Length: 82
Length: 348
Ligand SMILES: CC(C)(COP(=O)(O)OP(=O)(O)OC[C@H]1O[C@@H](n2cnc3c(N)ncnc32)[C@H](O)[C@@H]1OP(=O)(O)O)[C@@H](O)C(=O)NCCC(=O)NCCS
Image (cartoon, rainbow over all chains, first blue to last red; front, side, top):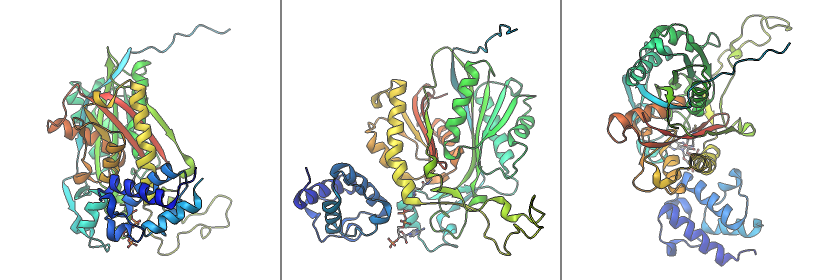
């Protein structure tokens, strides 16, 4: 079953919390992974792979750099989830 | 007539009997790396965990470093050089295609006439060599095998490449593999992923420097190096490699534990290839290793020494008392190829 945007953001928040230790409630649509959430380029790779598993999507390396904010990532997942 | 042939027969099992390492005398801090790239000590430390690395001087050749490490390993095993029946050297930074550097090393340590050869398996080279050695001991091809991982990666480093200039180091690590009454080297989980061969590679083949006539060519000009060809170096697609290392290699490590019948709780030591602290941290997390497991973090002061990294880290853990003889250790190497090899061993 495809996830809703709300579910995706909740899932991303848990992933970011697990990987970067950021409180779940801080992970909001307009937050930038690198600037606001302390997720650097390598942690971003970990976030992406965790999201791939959780939401059954493939996010190729070349698309990762376009996912600047939590909103970018949730839109991408919403569009591409299997 | 097909004659009956006696089978090759060796010891029931094999074990690592001794370990030795050589680190070049010159320590290179991140500040020195910053002379050539736009970066910072803080960035390098946060992305790789590397603070310093050793770079070899002119006298610290691949052979010299290997001989030093081998001598220590032989002494640690309580053997003499003449007892060594085979020498396996894993390296990608010995710059002569032939002969193998293993024969010179065997000669210089005074080993007589052992079988001696080089292998090329990048950062998985130690595990590949160890696996060959285990087979040789248990099939009787050699009673004692010297396995060396040695690199002078500074020779293959592009100091102006931001993505790799800070990563690599030089050094040699050696172990002796010999007979055992109990299993002390578990099954190897190993393999290759040639579809990813471009993700870590040498930029140019040596024949860019060819200035003599090419067979079948029209003359010396045919494949002559452009006037200022950039010296060949190792490049990589950092994020692709990171992704592979963190996720695929944690699975391989788990498979090696399963194959050996060892649970994370039974493990004393984890010695992954020392490529990047972030990869190490992530693997520890994914494998859910308990706090009680000692994790090798030699990369901080050694950088990535490819095939040498695991025996170097093993030696340091034992020398500093962080690990002890008889401990159960998971080792995993992975790198250019892409190739990987993981197994569980009893520490010497
Ligand atoms: C090499 C490695 C540390 C690079 O990290 P990375 O996050 O992939 O780096 P990127 O090239 O994606 O760059 C990310 C950012 O850091 C910057 N950057 C890159 N190299 C930098 C450097 N040396 N210093 C400072 N900043 C640097 C980039 O400009 C980029 O900034 P931007 O986001 O503002 O554009 C990392 O990819 C890695 O270690 N991978 C595994 C490699 C490995 O271990 N291989 C051997 C296995 S055997």
